[in-house]
Image (cartoon, rainbow, N blue to C red; front, side):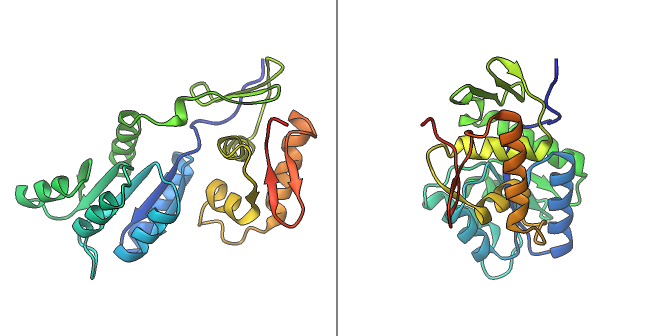
Amino acid sequence: MLRIMYTAPLMRILVIEDEHRLARNIQSYLQMEEHYTVDAAFTGEEGVQKALHSTYDCIILDITLPIIDGYEVCKSLRGHGISTPILMLTSLTDRKSIVRGLNSGADDYLKKPFEFEELCARIRALLRRTPTEYDTVLTTKNIVLDPNTQEVTKNEEVVNLAPKEYALLEYLLRNKGKVQDRQAIIEHVWGELEESLFSQTVDVHVAYLRKKLGHDLVTTVPGTGYLVSDD
């Protein structure tokens, strides 16, 4: 029986960190090792705007940001009704600072410097703690995607998908019935590190999915993007 070569459901992480090198290192590590899609923001204001306009599964937030610090960013996000788990990064080790961070709405904190393995463990713990739709089996027509087992079946037969094919299918299924343009797909499936990607990259992977799962699986909406529906 063929099985999917993929290790995790499609998760999207936002890193808000003004140290560009650290932010990029976190972004690269989480994408390469955990297969998360990771966006980066380098100011508190930019982080708030990204969190308000996109959906994330976890936010990694530095406390010592310029102009708008992490405490205010956290309060702002919670004030806008964003319940996404927030992991605060802090070089401040006194109890008062940590308590202030948790009181502002953070779910956990991690002291700098830290090991990437511990960062990943903290993120996984937050994701397990948070009830989300990622436990829900996704279906369309005769296709079933189970995030718990990372298996895709067609007519109850397991189909082998490459990691980006799986991620693309999961993203389209989670947005079933909604047209997704190529730029949105690139941002959610490939992430910001892949700035050199062109829309043809999406077209090629859609073609792969059609070949493996059926030509009627993904509908092309001319001039706009792609759509998966039950029709």
